[in-house]
Length: 384
Image 1 (cartoon, rainbow, N blue to C red):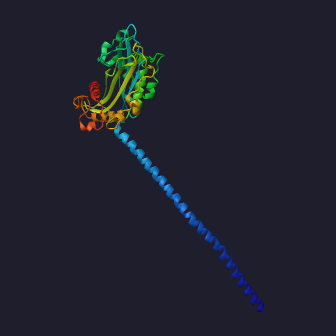
Image 2 (cartoon, helix red, strand yellow; image 1 turned 180 degrees about the horizontal axis):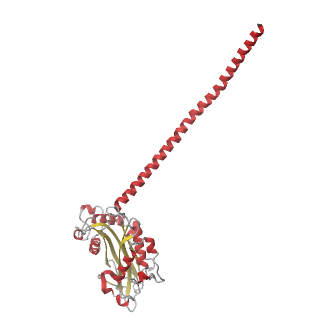
Image 3 (cartoon, rainbow, N blue to C red; image 1 turned 135 degrees about the vertical axis):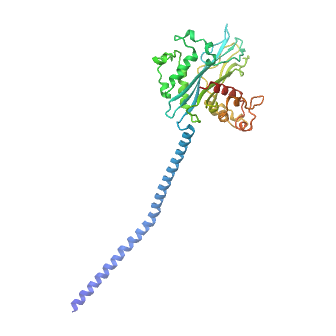
């Protein structure tokens, strides 16, 4: 009996010891796990919150990108048509005065295009302002106001007799325009030419034997610059150019003179009622300087940038009463012309300096707009 009691007591002690050990082992890890859980919980939540925020940001960014794409698609219309214009100018044909008067010559090739959603040209217009201005061996300017584009000169340009295919400039330009249809900017750039930039493609040679390097460059750039402006499939495309040399001046003993070809270019799309549906305006100021002995002092190799290409470097903002650069004012003028006919463009009210007097237009345009009106009317009348 005594032995049994001892064995029972021993068993009870063992159970007690085991229970105590179990409590100790469970107690310490429990505190540790709880501490880890307390620490880990915010980390888990932070990761989940961060992921949610990132997902939300991605969705928002995607929505914004989609919205911009939708805006562009909406502006381009169902068929995605876009319009562009570019001007490529050179002054390399200018000559010093000597026994004969000098010539300050600015050749500006302008191209206007409409492209479809695939970037293929569906309409193309070309013209060239070949402005030849005279100055004497004494550095005096020979003023002129009779400047017509090559297309406007028509048969009077005088290329037909010298052409191997018996075609005048405007006819060859028309063939180049038609050849550009269906091509992308890259395909225009890839048109094969010889060392003088005359075409070598047999089909193109049948209608074009003149140098086309500048035409290729202008057409390709116009296609690359094209933007959605509300052009529709059946709209006509027109291009108008005007030029003057009003800012030319004689040379003096201590100051160079200059002949400046100030050209304004306007491309428009018009609907069936002759109303402007899209408009692009640009200008060049091709300036050839010379001294009092009639010797040219300008670098003739640099070409001429348009005002739009110059952007903020044109430097109008500081002198503008409304704090707007030239390209910003041009954009306001473009917007104002949309929806107007040629007659309505002519009728826009201006003061004696040809600045707009209409309050809505004057809010965005303070420059003289007479040249833009004249060129826009020409573009509408030329549209086809």
